[in-house]
Amino acid sequence: MITESVSQPQGMTKITGLELKKIDNKLFFENHDYVGKEPDTKFIYASIKKIAEKLDIPTNVASFMCSDEENGLERNKRGFYFSKVFANDVVGPMVLSQPSHVANNAGHSSHIFIFKGHIGMYKNESDGKLLYGKVESERDGMLRPTCGAAYHVMKRLLGEERPEELPNWDIDLIDKLEQGLRSFKQEFLQEYERGRDELEKLSAGIKFLVNKNVEVQVGRLLQILQHNQKNVPKLVFGGITINRYKYSDTTLLTQAFLIKGKDILDLTKVPV
Image (tube, rainbow, N blue to C red; front, top):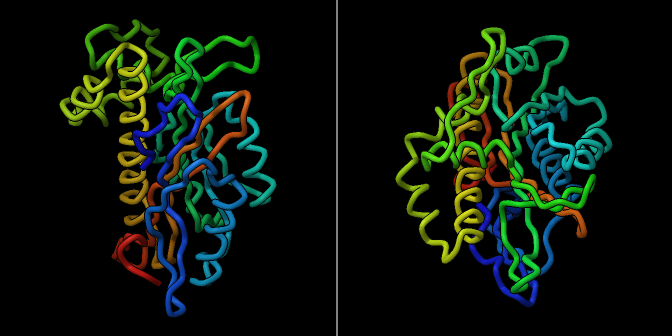
């Protein structure tokens, strides 16, 4: 889970993600603090490949990632490092049962599932603080909320925004995301109120919701695959991409699971 400490004027970040470790020929993931230097996508995907090779699991990947254009380079990297990927780019992002089943079926035969949320990070020019929740758009240079879907969920949880009235053929995907996060409203409000001003509240609020959404969606994905996995081992990962414009993006793993038979193994607790 990405940490609190990104608000120092000197520009030093402290971000926590999972890192693959090896002890006595056993592999497992543990939390690791990246201070000042964060892992890139190549490092994360290499870690996934290492544990897949250890378990003799084919590196056929199904990936869920938000369709935001700021993730464009990350999508290119995904294709570069994994070649053919069953890609599901949606708002949120949000796990959908039908594409999950399709990715798991014969012909696609995905064995590794990766779900990634994303969050913006920017430097507030007036005081030099590094904050979450916004990204400077590469298209027009404007700061905008990121993840935008999490921002709208936040506004709805705060009672500052109501759902739009959509035509009957359309779907309110923001509402679908909110449904999975409503039970965490009090936790969200506690994090949100920790901010000393509106920018810090936005930073804390979106950070909480993006992380919690990854947990919720990975839980849904595990449930789908556990009931439709035909005794074939599957790896399921959750992660966060931190979008920046002036500096390179960062991708962190936040969860790692192995589905084996009827069992779901948390690879931060069970070495393999």
